[in-house]
Image (cartoon, rainbow, N blue to C red; front, top):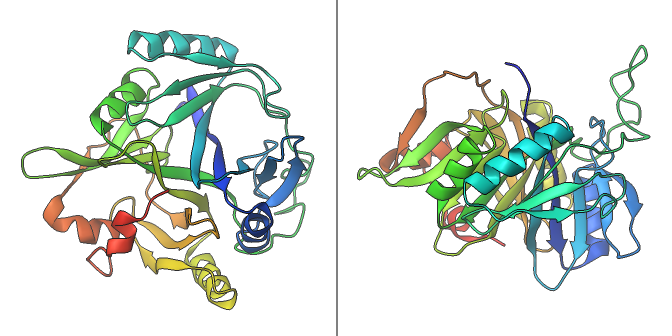
Length: 307
């Protein structure tokens, strides 16, 4: 599949209630590396297998949740083209100047019909501590904690998921890989990909807009999921569910909470998606199996707790 237009999830800026506690969680437990701390107190982190400068930003605030999710695009010409397409789809686009985050070029920003802010950018400095490229070892700095490889995706809750799906498909070129539908055809969830992954963004229908369900980090394999569970138990991290796997995406997973109540996931596997693949459809009566393939039922916490 040719990688053009939107390339990948770039970064997520997450609100946390206590920065010291959050750093222990994201740095020491999930295994991210601290890149820098800004004058405004924001902390920038990255996973060890990411080339770009940072992928997670923590901002201390009075309320947990997600400020923005951003996607990296091919180049500045594409950024201009996508802005025009967003405007054509009725989105109001604003501009964020280069340098608002260290090492990041100019960004365009819009609020999706679900109330979530998304940014697009073409330029970010490479990390001084990224993967090696000259006769490369598997890693430059020894992985730690849950050994997160990269920021993988977000799952978000909001009202107009059909409108958001339209914007991401028509303006940004995403493909819908899977959906959950009621018998009357109403979509309850959509899973969207900008490349060959099963999903880079998922959105679930919810009465309240702008909510975060989880931020997900890719790890290597099923054994790594087990090791993450060991860390969760060792350090009394609040567990949601898992280890288990999904029917939707086929990924292996474990869900847990940061000290501020933001849900995290570590995720391995999942199928490869190619343009032209048939849409996978889950009916509501099978949604338990779709979300948690082994348990075949949902828990109230997973469906109801968002930030």
